[in-house]
Length: 161
Image 1 (tube, rainbow, N blue to C red):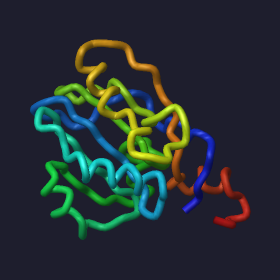
Image 2: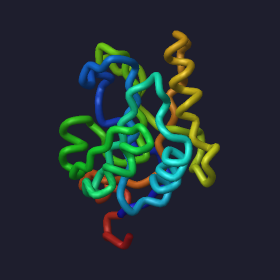
Image 3: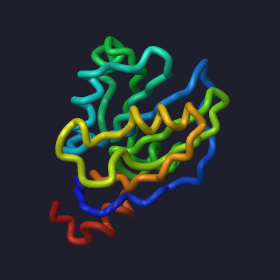
């Protein structure tokens, strides 16, 4: 998996996700990515918020951990990197999307201002809280690992990682 220290580019216009009963928070993580693993640890420790629909989308993983995630209140799905890019415009992770109940996406970007190295570097709770209260939220870069083939080639053209 190509790891990088520059932001992952936004792959989609702010569009729509499926409608839900409340605000939805989508956490895109990449299998075998240290930053994604750190976020997964934080999410599993804290659990999903009761008043939100929280979904974890693992890019390059498999469904074998769905019971673990469901037990902590999250919906879980594993997808290929092609599906993540085609359906959601996501080229790597960790990547955060936040949508209103009608599915309109208000935020699509990163979790932190810098490369995360501990759990409290992830600002997703604050981002969601501010969006729900109607505040404008600054878009943050996404530091982590590329999953899209084209992005991996640009970051690591010789395929060394």
